[in-house]
Image (cartoon, rainbow, N blue to C red; front, side, top):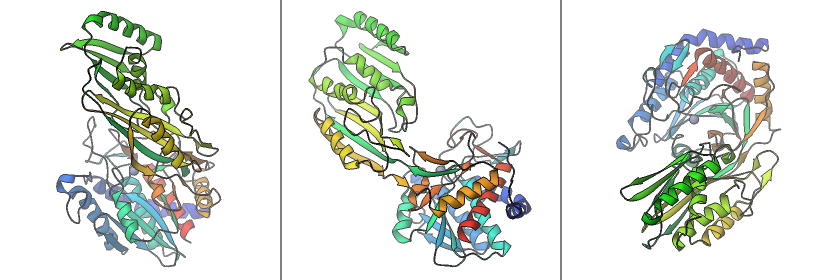
Length: 475
Ligand SMILES: [Zn+2]
């Protein structure tokens, strides 16, 4: 897309301020990105609860804020806020300075923040240290411009967004909620509604009773559709060739890839599916469910049946909770989705089944839980809830949404289409919070990927948009 500011004289004024600061913005963003702020439990201690790297980025930013004349308040190294202005009400800007590890396949080292073709390449460039710098400079520009505002502006510095959100948990235990605000950690125009997201873990103990299945494994993460499943079969000597043949036919019939090979007297069956994000399981093909349908045709024993039957009976061809009687939907957020992300069976040990369930506002969560527990209970499984975030929604007519819509439209010349999503963004940590940028519609999302980068004109444009947005929200 074209990356330049359209719009009014006032917007152009803020854009001029940003242009005047651009060398500083670029230099500081590079420096900030060069700090390897990755969660490191080995150096975690006291006031560095997530390790030295994150603490270093935290100190760097807070030192800068104090030098620039902001009020800074720290919350034990878990979080902090940078504040300016006066007034009862508070506009919150929720950012995070932790990043996922660099990983492999980078053209230049992940924490070098090298500039090539007018782009800064670094882990965190887009998620979320680049946008954090943009919001920081937006605040600084407003402060230095001498405007007077009616509300306080508070940039909240999170440090554990990429793992467990212990930062915001700690922060909001000790600090009040902003009146309203945004998180620059997802997409433009505005994400105003997010589904509830809950992980369920079901387990049952297995006996030593010999059948066909020695082990079965599919999936690594609950929020992904597994693209691979393996089963190791034993006691198959008499049927080996027959089994291989029928497996081949099965793969042909289902039009999927896979293999059958003999390894140390075991028959290893592998099926390949198609990976997809768990928020829309229908975009993928669940390899575990596929392999389960094949195995159910063997003459399985009681334990084995009680593992594969619920998979197929409840979840095959049904990612909406219909068979279990909780297929809620609402107009804005759509259907309940159920992703079967992890399936494990280990003879003589345990069977485990992990689900990621997403549900719209107004769905009865208790009923989802009870129906799942009852269904799985019929097969001897007991359940436990893992992480759970409730649905999050800000009214479309809320002044926050209206103001940000106007700012977006004025800055880009495009309508601000309001987004409701199945995913979860950092904005759900705020009572009245929406996600607002930094990615524009159609821009490739390189967060967590090799060669993550932010174009300099993109960085400067969002700085202008955030300046205008904060001004409009706080004036
Ligand atoms: Zn993020």
